[in-house]
Every structure is written in structure tokens, then in C-alpha cells.
Figure (cartoon, rainbow, N blue to C red):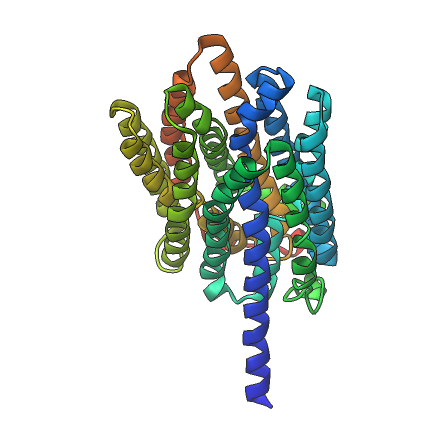
Length: 407
């Protein structure tokens, strides 16, 4: 009987990791290729780049804001309904992107619908389930596995999306992606937990408002929030605008596609490796090192002659650093505050990430329309690396000490 119980635990962990990994693969993979649609959509509708950029900027902002409430629901009632609804909204949003003929319609579909969809199908929700059902001594590793899956999705889906655009057209490619997004629904059902609050003591439940007040009163939480802003700014600016940056330089479209795919491929290794290292080394040092290396990588990329080789090298190195911030950041939140409100608190941290994403993608479009160049935003991304390093170094990772009144 003991052996059977242990086997059931292993199967449960395998099921959670399998379903969670593939949900993130689809959700993150599809969105990673949105930059491939910038020029086809703006040219077909005779829009400037700011129209497209602002819609995707709103997507990131809506994703971050609604993620807080998706986390609250998931923490209290379980993640299944949140994930299933997210899959439905994802499919509807992609259809809206395909058939929108006005900037407002495009913003409502790609910005609001897909933003809400991503809040229910990406890291905060999936990590919440992992945090409640996988022991703390394997939590960073498990988050690394799921984050690596999201990275593999970027590697897998960008060539697929580029292929769909070439074989059909940009509009029909979005329709096909809409159908693929529905796969999230059965995978979400596979994330059903034995109890909505598995692993949380029913006798010492902390209220939502006290949990929020406690987190924002804690200096290390505020530092994590500030540092994660930079991650969002950098990765979304590069992911959305680099394809156009390379095309403007006269490079063939496949160079941009290969570059995004390389980011996704190498991010698999970087994210998984950092998830493992988070079990052994202080996570604040890992985060500070990642942001420092990002800044150095961007500097070298701008100084080197722009060739396909330099683009691929930059993409590979940046890929190692791309989402590797995700496992240590979320693991620190769980380590400090516990798992009861983990998805919600992770949602607050991620909202900061998405504010950075909003500014990264929007400023990219604005700066290009004003100056005809992305250089000012590249320089800002370098400066923000210094800021993020300074924010993460003082973070204290030990569990917070609560009084009876805190619960």
C-alpha cells in the first residue's frame, strides 16, 4: 500500500509537469511569434507601427493586471476553470486578430482578449499549482522544467507560424493558430488538483488583504517587483521589434525567424539550468547575474557588425538569459511568503513585468516612428540592466516571520 501511494504521488507530479509544460508551450509559443505579423498586418491595413505596437503593449498590460485576479481565483478554487477559460479566450482573440480592420478592433482582440487569455494560461497559474502540489525541495527544479517548456514552445512555434504565413497567408495562419490554442482546454482539465488549496493548512488561512499588505510592506518583495519590470521591458521589446529591426537592415525574413527560434531553443537550456541552480545557490545572485549579462550582451550586439552570424550569436546568448529569471523570481516569492497566496502574489510581481513589457513594445514603436531607429530603446534596455542588478542583490530570501495577527 505504501508503494502504491508513492507511485501515485510520482504519477501526479508527472501529470502536473506534463500538462503544465504543454499549456505554457502553447501559450508562450504562440505569442512569441507575434512580431512576425507586425509588417503583414500594418501593411495590409495601412497602419503605422505604433498601432500594432500599442495593441500588443495593451496585451501585456491586460495580461499582468488580470493575472492578479486570475491568481486569486486559482488560489482559492483551483486552476482548472481559469485555464479552460483562458484557452477559449486565446482562440477568440486570435480570430479577432485575423479579421480586425480597425485599430480599435485589433486592440480589443490582440490586446484585451489575448491578454486575459494569457493571464490564465501562463506561469503564475501553472506555478501556483506546482507550488501547492510539489515539495519545496523540488519546487525550483519543477518551475525550471515548466519554464523550459515555455522556451521550447518559442523554439517550436516561431518556425511553425512562419511556415503557416508562407503556405497560407497571415490571416489564415491566425485562424489555424486559433484552432491550435484550443488544445489548452483538455490540458487544463489535466491540472485538476485533489483539493483547491492542497497543501495549505485550513486552520491558519491568511486573508487576501492581509497577504497583500504583508507582501508590499516587505522590502524584498518590492525589490523583486522593481527588478522584474526590467525583464518584461527587454524580452518583449526584442521579441516584437527585432524582426522588423533586422528587415530594416536589409536582412531576409528567415533571419528574424531563425533568430527568434534560437532564442527559444537556447532558453530551454538556460531556464532549466537556472531552475537547477536555484536549488543550490542564492537566487538573488542568479538574478543579478542574468541582468548583468543581458546588458553586456546587448552592448556587444550593437558594437559588432550586423550580420546573420552576429544575429544568431546574439540570439543564442540572449536565449540563455531570456526566461531564466522566471524560476528564481517565483521561487523566492514562494520561499518568503509560502504557497497559500502564491499565484496571487506572483501575479503582482508579474504585473510589474508586464508594465515593463507594455513600455518596451510601445516605446519601440514610438521611437521608430519618431527617429526611424530603434537605437534609443536599445540604450534604455542596457541602462535598465544596471537597475535590475541593483534591485536584486539586496533581496532576502528567507521565510517571513508572521505573528498570529498576520493570519
